[in-house]
Amino acid sequence: MIQPAYLLGALFAKEKKLAKRCQKLGVEAPKVIIIRKFIQRSTNELGVENFDPMFEYEVVGVSPVLAGGWQIVASVQHTDEGNIVKVAPKFQETFTENLFNAPDTCEHCNKNRNRKLTIVVQDAKGKMFRVGTDCLKDFTGHNLPAVWETFEDDVDLTKLTHYTESYHLGQVIWLAYAAQRLRGWKGAQTEFGTPTYEVVKSALKGCSCVREPYGLLSGDCPFCVIVPNALDIEKAGKAIEWIAQTTEETGYIANLRVAVMALAFKKNFPLIVSLIRGYDNFVDGEAQKKIWEAEKKLRDEAKALEVKVPCPEGKETIVGEIVKLNVSENAYGVRQVMTVKDARGFKVWGTVPTALADAQVGDKVQFNAEVTRSDKDECFGFFKRPTKPLLNGKKVVVCNNNYICPCLACVAGRATGLLLPIDEEVLVDATDSDVDF
Image 1: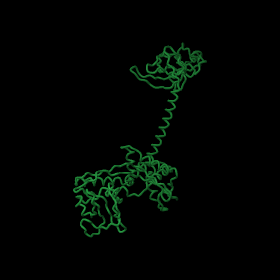
Image 2: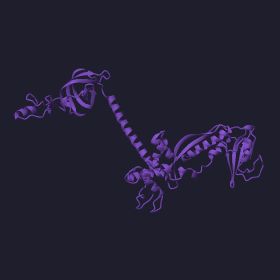
Image 3: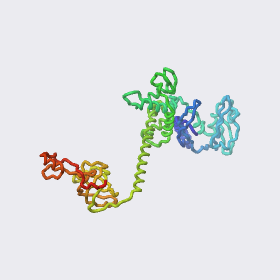
Image 4: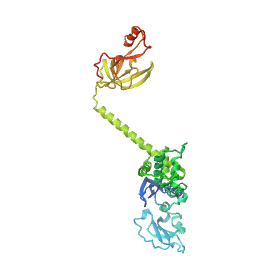
């Protein structure tokens, strides 16, 4: 059977109540199994699309056979307009009795009473009697309604306190999107402005200036301008369908799903309105995930096309680009290290020379160093004792500010009697101007 989601709690309450009765009678209690929960989309007479949380369930269990082999086969409700006949699922294919015009008499006691309900019972040999509820216990040992009768009874909505607000889920969510689009999102704890859920609730109740509900208003009232557009309605439908399909068992998403599916507007209206934030965050996260996956795919494809060049060993001149800079700490202290991709295709890692202390990722460098190939990756190596560094085609000299320093600044300083501050780094044109970076 398929029922609105707000009846789920009442259904389980009936299951629990019936289980207690079955325990007293010493028979196996039926169980309710939820097959699926879903959103049913429909369009009303005004052409507005509705979104109704629904669930499908079945009742399973062994049909009890009591003393004498008696079982309940069908029930007949007697009304002024005619009889309503309900047949037990077990007998629906074999039951052929025409009871639509049956009188309200009991074939057991034959007493004339104005009965509203009679029950059809059958023994092990197939013999049937239609009896009143008072006589039912003479055949089955009790006068309780049948299992399928219990679960098919209409639920009194006035007893469901969480359903006292008759809002439509679709209207709530698309108005929330409209309010967010026009005013921005305002949480329940906001210090400035009216919370979004209060704006939505006011729009649902209607404006006192025109007395029209559902937010389809116009006028000077600040709530009259909350008019959803086609995009708001489309996003609302997607948000409702998304929350119905979530599987989280704890946390915000789980609470949100329960509140939405149960239409628990009275106590959880702010939580239900926050569905738009939960869905938007989910969409943003999925979009970012797709970007990351696309970037990873491009990196993997580039790596697959990349020609693997084994790292050489021994004294080498490294000419390439800095691809990573970080800090390494060991027992001897802290040092700045860099990874350089050589123009030939391999990478090396080692300590940043003092002359390249200001280098950044992406800078072109050249230096001589002792290189050792990695045991784990033949295209990766480690360098040590780098010399003759060049940064973006220029030599970097650390001025010692003395009378024997060979840098051009010190030569000029000695000529003029002025010297640079200690350890001032100076870039001079490389003598190897034909180096190609």
